[in-house]
Image (tube, rainbow, N blue to C red):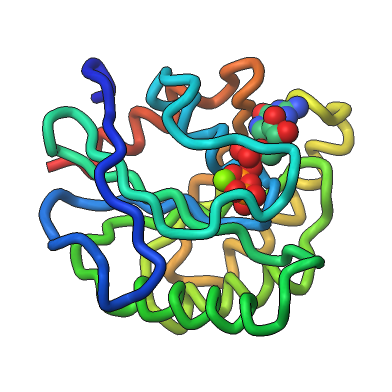
Length: 197
Ligand code: GTP
Ligand code: MG
């Protein structure tokens, strides 16, 4: 997987304009600025595939990327919990996400990203509820592991594992990654390879 370049092929701002369902899909979900676009780039080994920004709320639509000659589709989702976003934008996000998560049988897994440096926030709990209610298989991926001390990372892992245990739709394996150092990237690639068509 990812031996050949992935390409962007579709951007969607509304549920009635999603691309036709084809290859199995894996979606990247999480707080604004958690590192979704960076992880997508690290995974594919393509630095400029998805737009990375220091400004939260950069990704405002569902961006679809096709990989390995159509064997797998990666979906970069807009981040949630963006403080400056207007209320209507938040409602739009929730609506779009829920409709997408519910009505997408080809969606094989959602990667719910959690920042190693930040404790779980109410918006993350809301996302967990959304995923559980939509009954989609999801997996927690810890990001920015390079930016915390070992003890802090251990604490965060314990906290997240407790959350995972309570959710039946959660994949038991919590992956620890860094898009900066490449930690956990081969493991995540291997995981995605099991989902490709
Ligand atoms: P939105 O599209 O706004 O929701 O953000 P996003 O989740 O796509 O985050 P993005 O990948 O744009 O990264 C946000 C910031 O975090 C950027 O400044 C990245 O350089 C930084 N960042 C991402 N991954 C890592 C990482 O593994 N380690 C460190 N130290 N910084 C990272
Ligand atoms: Mg992004």
